[in-house]
Image 1 (spheres, one colour):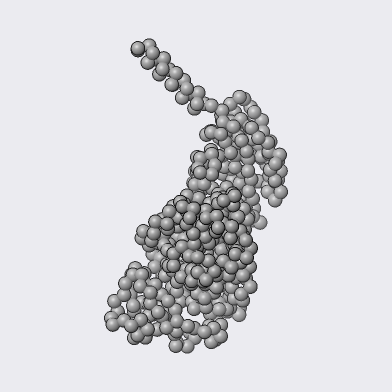
Image 2 (cartoon, rainbow, N blue to C red):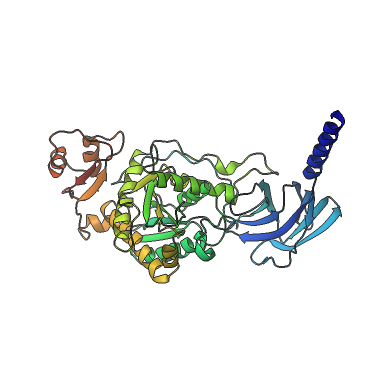
Amino acid sequence: MRLRALLIGLFVLFGASAQAFATSEVRSVRLWRAPDNTRLVFDLSGPVQHNVFTLSAPDRIVIDVSGGRLATSFDQLSLSNTPITSVRSAQRSANELRVVIDLSRAVSPKSFSLAPNQQYGHRLVLDLFDQGADAAPGPSVAAPTPPRPVTPSQPPSKLPVLPSDKRDIIIAIDAGHGGEDPGAIGPKGVREKNVVLQISRELQRQINAEKGFRAELVRTGDYFIPLRRRTEIARKQGADLFVSIHADAAPRAAAFGASVFALSDGGATSETARWLADSENRSDLIGGAGNVTLDDKDRMLAGVLLDLSMTATLSSSLNVGQKVLGNMGRITPLHKRRVEQAGFMVLKSPDIPSILVETGFISNPNEASKLQTKAHQQALARAVQSGVKQFFEQNPPPGTYIAWMRDSGKIAQGPREHRVTSGESLALIAQRYQVSLAVLRSANNLRSDVIKVGQILIVPATTLAAQP
């Protein structure tokens, strides 16, 4: 019996050791080009150890993969508009693969491994960041200066005021997912990342058709951007508003309807909101914002402000979100008739009002079919554009063309809605909107100055003259 147990133990140990040192195949290679970097993804049959180093004269990147064997070809890779001129390989031994990437210019490489998820198996990711003065900004950012709070009536002036004192209002449009991260996958393989990019481009076109507004896309093509980097891009664009476009899946295929989300200052407002936020926040794990091998400091995340007080910014987010949701309800069913709140990482900008628009559930066959049609994409974009326009006509940033139009009496200043958030008082709200306490009480039939968090107040049109 002892001999039998010993033999079984040796067999198990030998099997585990053999598995640990088993050769993993490189089954496929995928490539994406972003404005400031090129990403190569090697799909593997199992985990590997790797080492990356650079060579010059000529410029090359070398990847040594321990326990790797090539089971695909690099011929299908489209290398146009990338610094890569060719990709070649050599099997240095039965247990070591060398991949050499020839370059037309020097780059800064970063690499990391990704564990399997619902979409992919094991992966080795290599990011090649552009260098030089003519390159787009890389992933490393300087620590930003502390932003001043945003108020619904006076968002910060993001861009230098033009000589005419009439700048455009900037809307940053973020098409969710991209590249390595396909987002939700609906019937017949329709991918969220493609649908939301189409809607985002249409929304950009419609916003740019309005004088006094300018839309900038955060993601202009099919490539991956980490969640926190998206808000950094919006800030560099001088955004007055951040709008993230999605078309998620739900645990039940029967779920339907559009939604609008703002950041939660507490718990999620519903189980669906919590589930969607968890799903979206996992996209960094899918697309990879992981560890690197050539740099022990991930400076891309340095200086991102997540824990500052965002009371005024959140108030603006809820305000614009409700206007967008109201317009969307006219052209498509709604999942919820109020702006929901959850901990979406992409909304955690302390100085830019931010909303996330779920255009529908791509897991629902009927909605997936509609989301792919140009007519429905145009209607969704029009609803978002209308809500954004309504918000800024009531709350234009100082120094903008829209503020000049309003102060000149060329835009009607109708009543506004304000959702009370934690820490606000009636006096503070009256001061923010430049109305008297008595007028604010009268418009809302209030017998005292006591208000509750979440309460919707009607703010009457101001009768004050244009401020200098």
